[in-house]
Length: 427
Image (cartoon, rainbow, N blue to C red):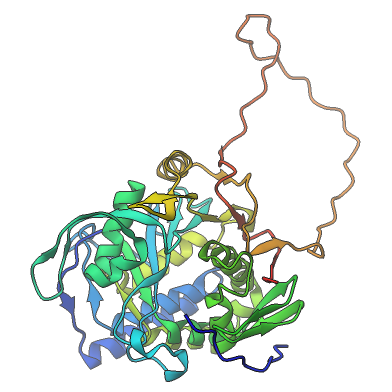
């Protein structure tokens, strides 16, 4: 591959694929107005902005998934009952996108270069976002073709090819097979959607520990804090050569720097009390996302948003699917680490809160200047007298209580929304 042209540095401050459902113009407008009103009613929600962002996408044709229940009752505008599994897919298709994204030969391609699973626990006390490396080889089940027929199942293909084999529903099928979880909700977003969303929230602050200099995505950022939106936000999320070890694994940890800051931004009262931003987020999604039929209802979107509103930042975990390099058909490739991955998804299936023991990833480092909350001095009190619980040996000696939750293997890299991290440039 020839070297890219050097640009001057710029400063910077599952599911089965089914029939498509169309919407009438009048119905779309009615749903849009209802969505805005619904979000105003729940604007105290930390993720109310997301409700608008998802709900208004119902004006576009939706995709039916096998795990959707036909004719299911629509929930009231209240926190959804039980847990939620939602797959968010980022497509690199240039079709219908701005010419500035380049790579003309990819205009008709459709790869899911970003695949993330959001899991909300049954009791709405924790949420986890798992990122799947695009180059990881996985088994792909048989998927229906859009024009009829089916694609044969494949034993080993990169996960980012699933969108081209059978659309959004095929990606859901593949992730279900990989994780053992049922995924009844899914959404696909393209480049313009990322740009418009970042504009709608007024930008996201990201910390850069070392300069990022990437000619491939034209990402040029000096060390320091930058407020990114529009094209600059998209370039930051797409950069791979400019961060960490230049791999997609480094890009994922770099994206988590952005996502954790985005969650903190949405948690702030400034975002949630600004009607212009809320309306802007709704408008951003209207023409840039494809949703599963299960997500195209106003009440469903708001109820999912309300399930997230009270989750502490420390319980919003961003994790990277654990991988290793190994032989695949005679070539070195990215392979799943099955044992720690099984522990991760078993914990999600059991709704256990998660703790990370691994590093943040090759594309990020902990922010040495992160804000630190002052710890109040302990009050001098006399501890109450308690009875000792019987020990296994019958001595009556108290036994320590087990730490709640699951500590993930160190091969599972990531961070929480409460962790302040910086992007690590690739020198």
